[in-house]
Image (cartoon, rainbow, N blue to C red; front, side, top):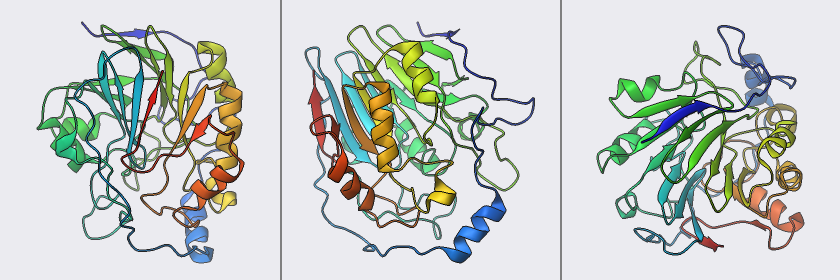
Length: 318
């Protein structure tokens, strides 16, 4: 029987109407976004890269290990003997409310949706279209029953599609399943799906706690003191999923997204045993070239402890 419980106290981040980043810069304004669009110097990237070899994950994993498969962007399949968890799933061609305009995928997903094993939980870190993709969520829901976990006040889009069960968590709250617990933890970001709903719902990362290990999914986040807070509350995770892309120009993106260098600092502050790069290589959402974050990370990341997987590639970890 699943159970929701309040667990930990993090800094105040709600003013009665809007959520905000405590003791940190807020997300850029619409005027900032206009300035960026009028002055940006986007690096060229191929319109499409045909280098993905789709894989088929096992139905379940055996033993005490953890299998992590990067599907694409921030979509990761986490498999342990007792669960299959999917993060921020997107299989759509565009990360957009429209099918005819918006950022389009430059690489295919590394796992075909029909080849996914049965899911137990889908974690959604916030309501942006590249992380809460309703067409994908409808397709997943048609394949079987599982629970959605979303940040506080972010369930509206799912409930409008009759998708569920869905459980909202504020920072510091948790939801327990028979063999694992999901804790919502801080991130530095923002939310919106339109012009008039900015920061009416929360954004978060998640710590997945099992008997064997801690696995941290950062969601979308800027670099900040929350990594220290998370380590102090939980200890060091054995594995961390850290975003590295959509990071240029820094004057604009540093308030909402980490750079590869920021991700390395976060990895070190968390004391993570192994980190895996996410939020790169599929959609070109900012000014840097599609694979620039990957190349930068590989040039300076600690060897063997910060992995860059291709879409469809898995890491089997003990």
